[in-house]
Length: 606
Image (cartoon, rainbow, N blue to C red):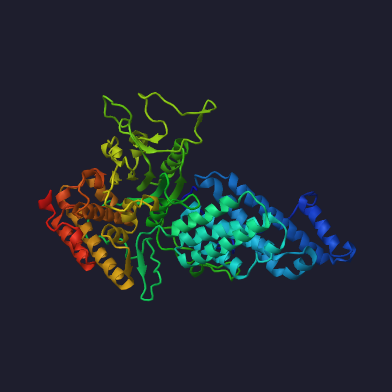
């Protein structure tokens, strides 16, 4: 799953924001499958000469729009997955045609029912394609508002039972369309944190798969059952449940809210850089994933987005009256999601992001990947001598053969070494590495004097801590949902909503104080302050310090490798080991009645 492009023009349709322009007229001399199908359909409805000219034209126009929409939709897969200029106009044309098609079938439903034999599952297919367009537009732009639009179309399909008659037809390919619709709907609901809907959809999908495999002797039964297993594991990945008084689960969102990031003090001098692009890379072995999105990727994705707004409040909703209001500017950084990329793929997307990065902007690289360690001893300590993180080797072919063996004196080929990132430090770069070999990136050299920060995970966790690696990394959980991570290391697995909200409010106070510690520090590296003007990066930095301070105070985190590190190093006495911050953490532990798992006089214990 990959995502591309910076600020696109909005898709001009009533399915998207607005529709301007018209669909081109079909050429007069056009022999296509539509024509042959049209002739067969209309002849089955009675003598062809008896069909009124107006109805004949209605069916002709519908068939043309349907054919054109399929051509454009199928062409989407040929668009480059990176860069912005190549895909914008094509997406706009596709939206325009689907807008015409959707509106046309609504206005001429009776004629199409009588003369074309339009079935409800065919209407569902059109709505499903529109939902996919909105979803892929979100992937291309990182605008969470389009997820709401995708949800509205997918939800309408379910509410209006467009696919209800599919199971009565002896056509397995139609049932597969229905199953794929469910899988896509689940992805959108996961991204919108609509977990109650997800659970209903999973149950319905399970019933559909059981019926499908019972009726048809297919070879894809195992694959569909795997889909169910993946989504079930995905929705159970959070280690702590927040409960209402009636024991129902509270759905918490971890996107940036208006009061999420600590505010800057008046007169505080920080950099004016803003986060514009992010590469979110997942290549951890055995981590829970769904639809090429690992738990770590999902959590970091949400940490880099604001709460979605409903486009209907800003612009016309599909099928409703048009509005002259324009959507507000895009405020989320643009993202690429790369699941198990090869080195070639990773470098291609990295170069595309670097090339299009605007002035005074930051590129963020998040690496959640298996560690690659150096083999043998090296006399030097250069940027290729400490290993790095794993890249996918499955599709890297050299001279027609996959590379399986290498000389022990050579460097690992399928690995992103710290030195591989050096060319991109010509622009402001913010790196997060969550890996068993994250410390390989501790020995960075800032060659070009641009702002550069690396936040590095612990390389190992205490054995006494329950292994949760398959359900996501503890370090990334701290960056995404620090209170849930704090509860987990404190041995808590559930909490009442009222206490959760009280602790969240106290955690916001802690974040504000951490921000002051950073900006008031006299010895902190200026790179941290240059990134501190951006809300997303400011929140990540304060959560990183909270994570590091918590682990250093925890009684079972006693080895150096259990602690996060950073490049440049933070002044410990002013940040992660600051007595004022330690006091706050102990107070939070007291609220939760878990103070006994932390050291009281932490500094004296070193």
